Image (cartoon, rainbow, N blue to C red; front, side, top):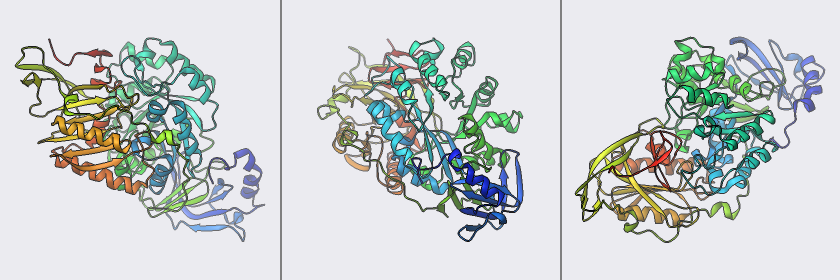
Length: 598
């Protein structure tokens, strides 16, 4: 039962009323469970649920009057009946999977609703790419709502994307059936400075009665923050500390606390609820970016909820942050996010609220997974050829493309260096004194070389710089066509010839991630769709991603999920310093900055 044939409440209302009254039989009854009511924050023992047309008809102490000869009956045997989990902010492309394969991967973990921002594919394929993601999302047996990307490029004038999103594009997309709102407004300086296009996009969204996603990636909580809040974003997920969470909630934003593959921002912020006692209705849990290895091996929204509980959050409050709070935020409280009459029958059976084993998952009244196994089909969109042919970097690269010339006569240089921070999206702006040999700057210590290879228009351009924090040793290189948000090619390495090999390899396979050491390829994850996604099953992609992580370890990297840091090195809207196809970017000032100090 996908979104195209799922009945609305109005279509189902006569039958729901009849079932609840006992005049008609339910399709499914779940008997004898503990109803976790996220409206009242209660756990009600010995309750039944009756489901018809994929929606809850009756939620109460005895549904025997709803049972007919054709009714399926599931014995809960005292287990908790909790609402299907909702991910309030995430990017399917970060899973390296198509919407269909992402759905297949997360369904066994109890995720039944996702609010997705496909701004990754928007940067590569524009509005047409967003439509492809939107259309495949609507085909799935769970609820995947699409936010229309707001910022491609994320920072105009500081990067060049494959396509640009206009205010007219946003207005057009607001009429599509699966569009729930505007994706994260990353160009926060544009909003703060009253940029007409940014405000027009926000206005088009609000005029459509939909939700504006926020992204305020700055520690400054002064007038700029207040100006951003006044600009209309209804939520934000870029906070990293308790003060960030409190500030956003006080401004009427829903604050989203994320636990992704590499973003560990829940523990430092949930104290706003657990210790400061703020109203938990203002807070939402989300993943933002989770790659396939994390999903397959550790979980999805169930992982986030468990983590919040481990950080001291009451289990039912944690569930509220992953269900009803999210649905309410997007204007869907009457449609999903809770176990209550009329809502979509998305429900999980679990034997423990703290460890949250996902034992039986029902979406829209249909069993979709049991004990970790997906039991439904997740239909695929027919991705066209032009979506699979997006790596256009011009002539094959040689080692010379990655040479960095020193200023005339210099024996050493002081370079501006990107410093990666484990488990967080922001970087540090570092400085390093680097040696010069035969007029070329060499790496030293923990400093590696980074290069951005243009891959949308075959300009042949390569921008070189330096990065620190990965811990790489020996001769190695790693390249990826996943390079948020412009998604050119990012190459990091200690050997220029190997950097060229890695870049050429990704051009050959049509995009993905590759790791090289001592002249040989250790790992390859092929991502042929937009250079961002594979249409292989999640477990296959996860095995390749695990091999990639192992290869990075063999090259000396010990950071947790360092691939996520690698993929964000070109994200020119998160401080402090990044690289783009136009040069090195000081994100604290939103301007280009020289590679060397004069």
